[in-house]
Amino acid sequence: MKKFLIVGLGNVGTKYDNTRHNIGFKILDELAEEHKATFETEKLGDIANFRFKGRTFILLKPSTFMNLSGKAVKYWMDKEKIAVENILIVTDDVNIDFGTIRLKAKGSAGGHNGLKDIQEKLNTQKYPRFRFGVGANYPKGRQVDFVLGEWNKEETSQLIERLPTSAKVITSFGTAGLSNTMNAYNGK
Image (cartoon, rainbow, N blue to C red; front, side, top):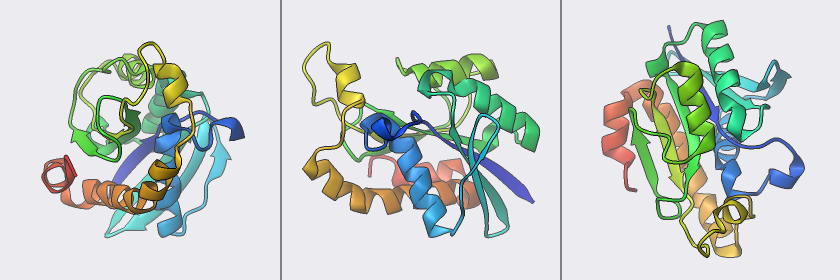
């Protein structure tokens, strides 16, 4: 049986719940709800799991805060004996238009501190990631305020459609594989 570790990046605490930086948590919440999985607080994060088409999906929302996510990813990979190609890191990306999906098999951290920490802890850039575009609608030098800011009304209304699509991306990753999922969803 194949196991997959799906890691949604975000920051813990209610003040971050509806921020752009927490899209990884939000997408995992959507996926868990669709599959009637419940998150439980465990070591280094909240964990939920479900089975789908013969696969086990382990969902992780690290409690280490965004910039130290690598510690939780490494711990759960080792604990569950999951190969690096069977992890998927779900995160925000300001370099992609709002709502646009981009999956990649590898790559740089692109200035994202959460990805940078994961790369350091795993000692590789070769791990699958799912970047959800949050856009770059902010004045120069205000990126931190933007990603830690809450969704505006227009974005919130569009998330209603984008979240279920994002959940399908994750189950496709586990059942159809990375390249088929990239072909089906990248740029959409």
